[in-house]
Length: 138
Image (cartoon, rainbow, N blue to C red; front, top):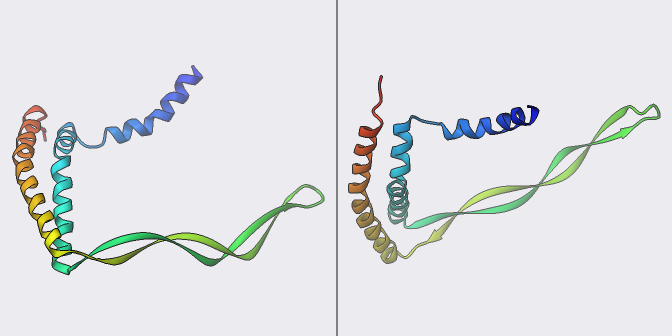
């Protein structure tokens, strides 16, 4: 009996996350994901064209001074915490500009617009079908 209880407790957060949104919202999200991805990519490309450059991110390791702790035992076995200053590494993200080829970027934009237009018809049909299959009451 204990094993089933433990399994249920472990699966509860997973099931709760899977149950996010109404059935209609999950259906729409599942069937329009490619359309949303292409739209997001198109927005990035249009932003690059308007700025004249693209943004990229890289991970940088930096060092900073921090408080460190050490735990020792006294003669009676009690834990004694001591603090001292030390240098610690941490990872930071930094954005930087990347030059673009405007002609290639415009070609990419045109391809994404064509793909988005083709996907919009199927996405709209999917939204209509999801609304019919899972009507929301309220």
